Amino acid sequence: MKLMQRILAVIAACALVCGVAGCGAAPSEAASKQLTIAWWGSQGRNEKQQQVNELFIQRHPGMRIDGQFSQYGDYWQKLATGAAGRQMPDIVAMDLPYMNQYIDNGLIVDLTPYIDDGTLDVSQVSDAVLATGAANGGIYAMSSGVNAPAVIYDKTLLDSLGITIDPDWTLDDFMRISRQVYARTGTRTNAGYYRDTNVLEYLLRARHERLYSEDGINVDDPAAVEPYFAMFQNGIEEGWHLEPTVFSEINLSVMNQDPLVSYTDNAHRSWCAFGWSNSLSGMQSLMANGDDLALAPWPSDDVEASNYIHPAQFFAITRDCEHPELAAQWIDFYVNDRQANEIMGMDRGMPINGTMVDAVWDRLSADDRESIVYVREMVEPASSTINPPSPAKAVKVNAAVMPGIQEQLLYRRIDARQAARMFVEQARDAMRQ
Image (tube, rainbow, N blue to C red; front, side, top):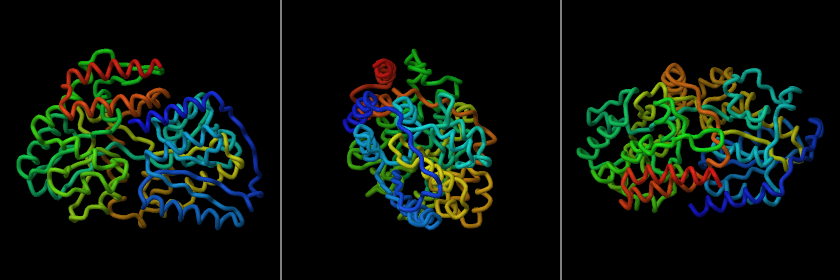
């Protein structure tokens, strides 16, 4: 939490000295030039991304790419530090909760000129996907793939217990299954601990409510968010939720430390993980016991109203980029090149170029295909439009307010009613600062 507060402070300070600076480079001038590209993720993603970069270099002889890979928490610290010193990488991976802050501070540039002149071809990208990176009349980030909210669960374990998940399951269903799994196996649950406010927003969508307004918190009544916090309280009191000490020993931003795939005993094990559909393949590869994983929507009182197609991540060109046209060519290559899509597979979600999904299908793993089928057949026909991007200050709620309250709740220092009241008050204060 202190780390995220430092990140926010650096970005805020940077806003005082940053201006949007543009510079150009003709496509024919790629030789002897360098792009610095930064991203986060697992080691598997790092290896795939390096292969894509090498392929781009082959198409542009003489140029170089400096790939900068970090774990999620470290990534934002480095990016904020680079922004303050006007030394950001040329191309950066961007996450939806942070995007408006980087746009508002002038740290990433509008891609529209490169779309208009054909450098960045979006003819096979849907308007809905393009809109996820749009703000202030421009397009500031290009989605690197699409996915959907998903509970990734140990299907082998549930099958052995005769438990099946209904795709329209509710929060009560989720808790009932968690109780059953714990009672019969001793295996516990991670109900989305440290999952910022995504799950809470998802639950509110069932009531056609939004957590954030354009510049603040849209929820005034703590009763609206209390059921979310009650889930954690019930889990701790009844024993089926992982104890908070488990999370103090691991880094949830590192996939191979998730309690679904890495544990020493059932007290440290979760039968599920709240995540995104594109994580199925990576998590399956880490299942040391060989159990088969599967996908289900996050539970909700109205799954169709809650669920949505989600931009997995974005790529954006920073204001510090010396060769923005070359950077736009790289993004175009990532989106539209068949070989690049074959290499990345479903690592960042389903390709946003619709023709690439069918083009690479035969080369995808069974788990990647399962992720695509989940998005296409379960989510797309029964979902709603994603909420607009959160206001820039929402990152304070995600980085500090929600984790702090969850921690106090799991340590039994507060109850669900207190947690709900504290969340509304602290979130409102954070958005006003």
